[in-house]
Image 1 (spheres, rainbow, N blue to C red):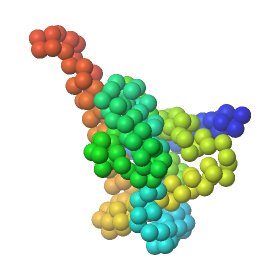
Image 2 (cartoon, one colour):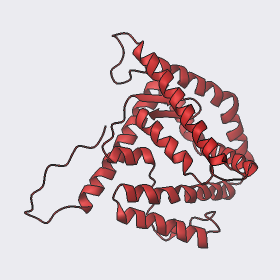
Image 3 (cartoon, rainbow, N blue to C red):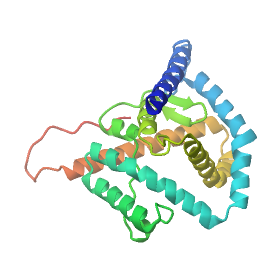
Length: 256
């Protein structure tokens, strides 16, 4: 019952954000940026997230970094990375990337058994490659277009496609599906704070370098997602290459 309620809330939340953004986009005038038709909504959400980050998340992450020894923070990062590798197995399979799926399975098995549940990243020491995949990438490999750029409250840069993928990701994430509410909330908070602490240096560079932080963040996000999906599509095509001389229809271009 709890998982069903969580799914309904997540789906309803994502649907409400998408509806609000698209309604505002429809109301945008003819001078709107075709590369970012939801820009008025996105900038509002971006400024909201920036204010929340400066007031709450960044100070908490800074304190966490200052009081927590580096080896402990490394262990926390490895632990959550091991959890994400579980979902990467599924997405690699769905994308037709058998070798990457095998690598992810080997990482989870190795780190869970020999790395104390993932606290120690033994797999990386053994040179087992890491292939982080999410359902938004899977949709892109399947040919689903990204849709308009979208800034989500609290979560930041996304797209219509990646927001739909995020709903699926959240329903199959081992942390968000933990049955113990206190443990689930504690782990979720720790993961968010740890991720933000790992980004403190990059955030400071961005603050100093970007004239328009919103536009810079948008470009970086879109380029990275297109690169990830393009690489995944290329890997899939390489694994299913026909013998030399065989004829086939041209491959469909990767989703943008």
